[in-house]
Structure formats: structure tokens, C-alpha cells
Image 1 (spheres, rainbow, N blue to C red):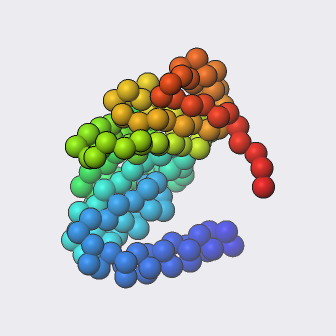
Image 2 (image 1 turned 120 degrees about the vertical axis):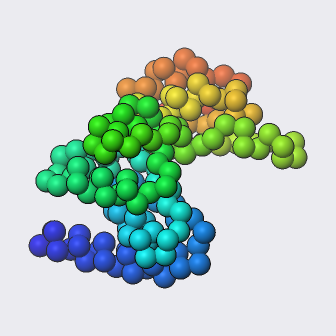
Length: 178
């Protein structure tokens, strides 16, 4: 029953994505499954550029399901640019597919605003503070970001982030509330 529900959901996502990407110049997918699979199928139909950002749960799933490597290779074959949030995740995807991903920690490229008008810039992330999420890697790049960085969450990297906290880095810890 769960498999049928997942297939129906993917079919619905594919139909909606085909409508949404008809005129798009680029299809950007988060997570290899289901987003990357749907993006790869849209690329086959529309022949548009497909970009995929890997996180962690998607690669873990592909490593552990039957035919996961085959599925990962299909997605990689229909993707023009592959990014991963950590170097370790890029290596795991390469082991699955033979395709090397570029690293784009937390989906942020440093200094994208360097030619923009000077204004206070704040960036933030709310995540589990584990290596696969890239929050600590992002915090180490904070001077290159030219922004005040806010990180909230809990996990094993929390103490290392607290040690880096200062003028350009605010660590808020675990957030709870309504």
C-alpha cells in the first residue's frame, strides 16, 4: 500500500513538474529522489538543463534500496550539473554513479553579492547540526559570505559552532515553540 501511495505521489509530482517546466530554461531539483528523478524525466521530455542538489537522505536511500544504484545512474545521466552539500556526500554519490558532484555547502555560494549595493545582509539555516548538513562548513566560510550568518539547530556539531560564534556568526541552538 505504501509503495502504491509513493508511486501515485511521484506521478502527481511528475505531472505538475512537466506543466511547470514547459517554458523553463533550467530545471533545479533538490534531493535525488523524488525531485532528481522527476527533474531527470522532465529533462528527457523538454530537453532543458537539469541541475541537482544532493542533501543526505536521498543518497542514503539510493545506497540502501534495491536498484538504487541503477536509479542513481539514470538520474545522473539526465543531469547537467550535480552539487552536494558536503565533500563526503559528493564522494558517496560518485561511488554510486561514477559522476563527481561539485560541493555547494548548504546551497550557498560565497560572495554572490559582492557587486551588489552595500546593505546589511543576513543569511541563515535551520538544520540538524551534523556534518551532512554542512552548517559547520558554512560557518567556516562566513568571512567569504560578507554577511551575518545565523545558525539554529541541535546536534553533534553544536559545540564547534558555539566556539566559532562571534561578530559575524550567531548560533541560536535548538529552537522550540509554537
